[in-house]
Each structure stands twice: as C-alpha cells, then as structure tokens.
Image (tube, rainbow, N blue to C red; front, side, top):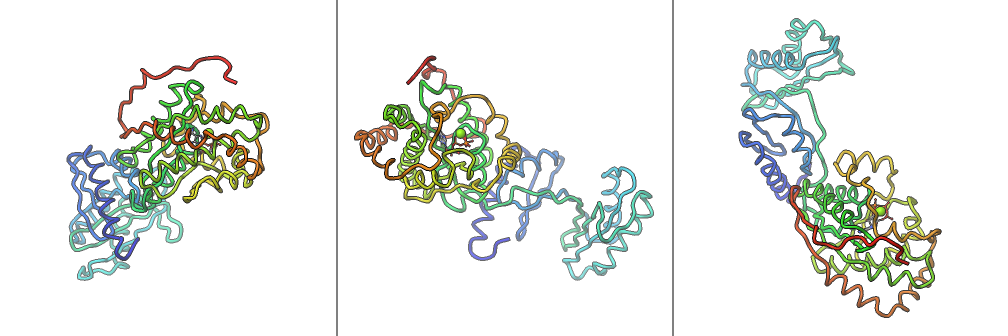
Length: 396
Ligand code: ATP
Ligand code: MG
C-alpha cells in the first residue's frame, strides 16, 4: 500500500520474514512482484503455510490461487478444475470477475466474465449467477506470465513490517492485556523488548515461567524477542510499610515505569507500552493514569486504551496468548492489591511519599543492575528449576 522511499525497506523486511517461514516448507519457492509475493507450493500443504504466513506483519491478504498460461481454453479448463475442488454444498450464487492486466490478451475483462462464466454454469448445475451479492466470486487475473484464478481473500496480519517503526519496551505481566498490547505494537511495526517485574518469594517460579511462555508466543511473530526480568521485591516492600495502602498500586506502577524507562534508555527504545485499558481497574482510571504516567518522560503507549475487555479477549485468543494468560499464577501487583486502591490519587502526596523513601533511587538502580535478560525464540527452552521457591505464609 505504501509509496515512496520506505516501500523498498518495508518490502525487504516482509520478504525476510516470509523466507524465515518458508524454511519449514522446503519445496516452496517464491517470486516477488511489485506489491505482491507469489509462493509456488510444489506440493507443500497450503493450509499450514497460510497459517504460518498469517503471523507475518505487513501482509494484507493471502489467497490460494491456481495458475495457467494466459490462453482462453487453458483459463476455462482451469476455472472448471478450480470449481471442482471447491465441493459446492447445494445451490451457490456466484460471479466471475476478470481483470485484464496484460492488454495484448485478445478478450476484454467484460468478455472474459462471460467466456469463463458460461461453461461453469453449464458444468455445475448448483451455480446460479448473482451480480450483486454472490456467495462465491471467482477472480481471474490475466497477466503476461500467466493467469491467476482465486476465490478466497484471507486477511493477513496487516499492519507494518516487523521493526519498521523503531523500538519500544513492553511491560509484560502474566495477564490477558499486556501480551495483546505487545502484539498490537508489533503489528504497528514496533520492535518490542519485554520487561517483567517479579517478586520472589511472593510470586512463584511458575508465574515467571508463564510470562516467559507468553514472550515466546510473541517471539513467534518476531523471530526472537528479548525479555528483561526485573527483581522487584525490594522496591515493592519499600511501599508496604508506609501506612498508605490505597496508594501502593500507584507507587508500584510509577516505580515500574521508572525502571522500564531506565532499561529503555539503555537498550535504545523510544517508548513504553502497557496493557492499560481505560477504566478497567483502579489503576487505569484517568486520574490514576495521569499520576502514574508522569513517572516517565518518554512516550507511554497504551494500544488497548479504548478497547472493551471482550474485544481484547477475542484478540488474545486469535494471537494464541489467551490460554496461557488465564493460568492462575499470581502477579506481583495482584498480591498487594489493597481493599480500596485509589482511583484518583493525589500527585503531590504520591511525590511526597516517594521523596520520603530516601533509598528509592538506589533501589531502582539496583533492580536495573540485577535484571536478567533472555533472548527467546518461539521454541526456546528456559530452565528456571534452580530458582527460589515460594515461601508460603504471611508477608506483611
Ligand atoms: P494485564 O492483563 O496486562 O496484566 P491488567 O488488566 O491485569 O493487565 P494491571 O495488572 O493493572 O492490569 O496492569 C496494567 C499494566 O501494567 C499491564 O498491562 C502491564 O503492561 C503492566 N504490568 C502490570 N504488572 C506487571 C508486571 N509484573 N510486569 C510487567 N508489567 C506489568
Ligand atoms: Mg495484571
């Protein structure tokens, strides 16, 4: 869809990603044309190939096609063969839409609609013509190198090619929202690195494993993904003793943004991404977001901000994160949720509390220094078995 100087660079990225997909389909070959990519299957299974291609950002639509030489009798023959493969269930309305891209071809697009449509009607008694709203449209695209016939136009992932819009840090929890926010950012062409905050021994190894698994699903769209695992226990417990339980979530979120910003600066990322959705919980009211967001100076992107939970859930199922997200492991924030978290925190009070905890800047820096970074692909194996286990009991 793009014109101008970005186009070549964007196409090259898509091509690299498609080539990576094709590594699992060794017989398949591809041909590039302006704005388009043809993949010759050579016997590879088209359904699994399409499933894999649907993960490549920047691909708008995918169509299984049959190809034949651009000669009338060959085109008709192929159209009949095409229809045979479809296995019509009962009466079906249809039309033929031809496009003569190669002008020396002797029949116009209009003529071709009739020339191809009539023998189809004769051969398949279930077919009925409908010009306005057909159930089936056979598209016939006549080009010099061959004629392409197809019915299906399957939506691809769309968006911009991977990494074409710079890099951002995704705050990845184990919930439903943040992985979807990550996917949406990647779809917009952002390269994403993940930051996860964990609180051993209050959160378990399983909770950390779950987040690593979620990042691996995202890696399936990006080839590989970095995850920064930040030890958050000390920062978090610094906020629990201040006698302002209703502000704990606000304070924790601000600390998270500060640490994520430090990591972003270190890694050359220009923005933060969260899974916030307006009004969903106390920390996502406008008042809370206002106070929390001020903890960072770099842009804070919230791709899901105006989405309903149902829409987010539907997306998480489509992208393959839902089943992991609903596993019942605790997140560091859910553990410390007070009875009545502030929905409209006061910035001045919050800043005063932070100021009073003199060791806070050191603790934030230490958390950054002790952060572990993993580079994951969709089938990485990460062994956390040597790590600390949860100590059951009361931690306040
Ligand atoms: P999610 O489903 O993404 O966890 P949520 O609706 O549960 O979202 P919160 O738990 O309030 O909302 O978190 C809001 C956002 O803060 C998350 O979307 C995520 O970006 C970030 N966040 C929360 N907890 C963590 C964590 N432990 N590590 C990294 N980011 C986190
Ligand atoms: Mg959460």
